[in-house]
Image (cartoon, rainbow, N blue to C red; front, side, top):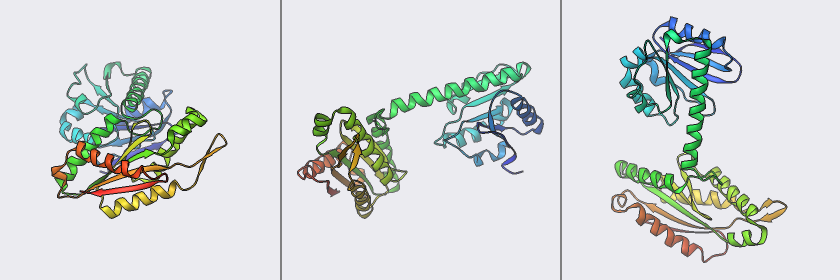
Length: 310
């Protein structure tokens, strides 16, 4: 049996994934959804044995429907699979009777149940819509909790968590890692001369430029005001220097904000930690070194980079 053995295309909308062993259950749920008012893009059946092959689509709405008996039978495998994914799934459990979902909620934070005897077009539609609404609200709250609302960069809370994770992984794998600290030059003058709205646009543009230069595995955070930090796992001194050159090149061209042409210039302090030193340094020690490097780089008016290898 293939991982996804049935797939039907509909108009742009929900990606519905039905995890089951029985074809009749899939047909029952799929046909009920099709005659509802829910806009569905795809309906897929996945056999529980092939649950590890599930694909995530972060840009679309995805929802899982599973029978409680299938979850009970393969709970360990299902929990392991979905706990390892970066993308969270809302889950609708179809049960014979009302059941406790405490064990399931350890893996799925957005969860609801629907009882077979009460399942109808309207009850299924209501359950799906409610789940998606709760899921989107939870995602928005997580974003507010973890990301800077102005620039979209990670906030200090998420930065501290990611840094601890990076150092932990570097120690375990005996791999080098790096950190870049940015402090914009002349940002106060921009706010004073052109207003905070232009200053906000400049910060957003700066973050956009850094996001273009960095790798997907790197984390960019706003620590406050015009200070930013980037975590760069698995980096040698040469890799770090190459990244800084890309960043400096993106900042060469001036940018216009409300017919005002501005250059973005920043002091950059870099710390490259080799695999021998990683176990001897705490996060606060690395940030202290980066802060010292930024202070040295700040003595130059133009974008300047000071690196220390430890």
